[in-house]
Image (cartoon, rainbow, N blue to C red):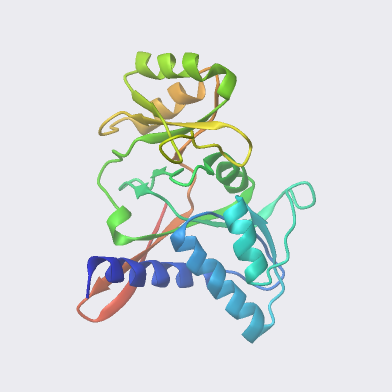
Amino acid sequence: MSMVDLSEREKEAAGKSVAGLIEDGMVIGLGTGTTIAHAVNHLGDRIKTEGISILGIPTSRQSMLLAIKNNIPMTTLLEHNVVDIALDGADQVDEDLNLIKGGGGAQTREKIVALSSKRFIVAVDSSKLVQRLYLPVPLEVIPFGCALTLMEVKKIGGMPRLRQSDSYRLFVTDDGNLVIDADFGVISEVNELELKLSNITGVVEHGIFTSVSEVHIGKVDEVGVTVEILKH
């Protein structure tokens, strides 16, 4: 079996695990990404087989379309400003359960929903678990000020790059902003970097998340696929 197949099995297991936490009547945040797509598909199955009634708050057009496909009724934070559980994935998770998110460019909406939730639950495959975060940190930035923002990121030790959707166009978020991927190497002081990024003019939101309740990690081993759950 290829590494891709193993990864998909782990994502499927982690997605199913977090979908199992959802109870009838809950309002849930629907994150963005391949692992959470499995969770949303499992929720669609539960609606069919168990008849559970839930409301979803999607964090992107991608998650909205997936909710529609799975017959999950949608709502907004204006109608339900407290969310029971937010389900999401991550690009990287460190040993202290800090996250880097934003590979799909939805980190601002994801963070708003996560901080509006009683519980923020993350599902990942085993490759996402690391000792220390080291991926470039995605920053959603206002287009008008992106030149200034790029300079400010360099001043705090980052190597910034404007994200492109293809060879000719810059990546644009659902809210019409640009994304800078800022490389800081291995991040030893997560909270310090988080504060510095939040203080940069023009940054709408960054992709460091520190408020996760628990992480479900899909793992393939000799006996099959298991899920390890890490909690704060």
